[in-house]
Length: 637
Image (cartoon, rainbow, N blue to C red; front, side, top):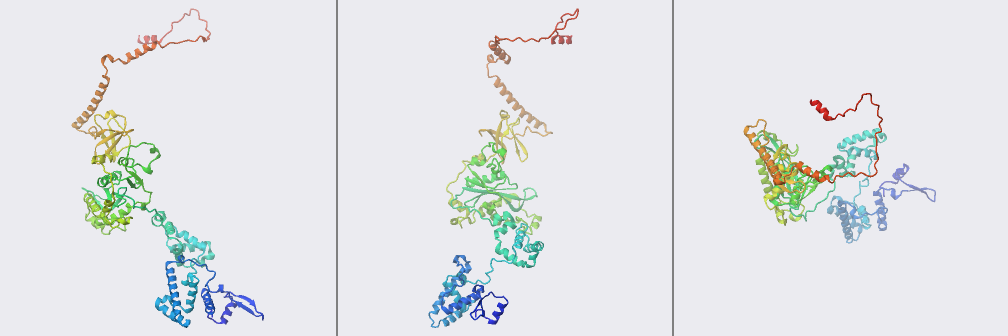
């Protein structure tokens, strides 16, 4: 029996329309009820085809309309089950050949199947026949357990209800699933009241989230674009195999998670690390500790790196203003239109023969130095007693106690220890980059083994000249040139500076030694000379007599030089050649007198005023005209 029930029970189901059936009339007039095979459940279908197989020995496909799938369309676990069933069925056929009665062989094999393969393969003889039929027809669906999988991809949640749930769930406010569920029910009660009672349990929504909403979509919707870019978005993988040491350096700033104390005072703060790493080996080639990350800290770190490892070909920079400086490597994308046409002198990078590349904004994964700073925190920063962490979750609970008791390291000692740890711990640690052949080596060994050529300054003096900072064009004033360094005005001039009055020049200076500056022509960048700092002419209001005397002597010295230059220039001619200006002008006038001739044309038109005169009164005589000289004479008299 297919249904394993009585005929009376089947008739009752038919009468109550609980079973799909078809009717036809028999020759004797009675009604014949037929139940379509397609209307049966999968289990009863299998029994039906099994009965056909046992009676005729023919091979039936368990579902002729089912499209056969390839083995790779199944999951890894399903493929393992399919392969195991294929082995079992082949073994079954081998066992049957050893028995005269095949039915006895089937009973024996089913009994041993559970023992050999476990509870999962505790099957009946009909099931074994169904599996074998599927195996012969290459119907892999018949070899795996499909119970509970027919509903996969189907949901009892109405589409509109689900769409609203997704709308509130994929929001950056990150509401809990239960809160989204309650809001969805409230929405359905107002807009879809007919669906309110049919909304399934909260767990159904939770399961559908896990099965239907891709994780990348969830991250983008609930955590925003930054989290999506960092955790779910595909990224470009850089290849380091063909990269050489010193071909690319990467620079960035990192706030050290250690509280230190300024030398000579009780003020505490956190220093910042400006670092350069070699992209090929991961070696931290140069660095500088500062409490104010700026372009000068970048120059100091670069100087430290070049003195140790040479000059790189390219430097990969962040987009901060401490890197995009006009005299360091140029303003990059920060260049304004008003400044784009201004000609600037060669920057530090140009003088060193280096090229700058800028990272994409908010693209931390493109900068390997970010991972270096993470390693720095774990291997160096955490070793100090006053480690404070990058956020409140990392901050030790006893930090306040340590700070209260004054267990704080000073800046100078901290800088010395950090420098020692970078070279002797970080740079000699195992390389963990993308080049497999170098993994396991020390970072410094990777640099040493792969470097072929380095560019190095001829001397330290040449390096200092190439690393000098450059101002924008300055106008030489009466007191020379003035630099504004951190709000402090510094004046540079000597007794010959007056020769450059009102000229535009570039000024290059070393921030570590401000006692002098070098000046260059604006157009040609030609070196003009070196100016010392001169503060003698800038005196306080209550200056002493000695200070005033020194200032006056400086001013007199320059005045005397200007006057001497004047005298030298006007006395270059011999006395007989010194013709005065008025004399020379009179001579020019005499020479031009012969050239001044007025030529009248033959056709002359006479013009008259045509005024009528009044008759003169009796006794009126002609009056002498009065001139301005007569008026002046009368006034004086």
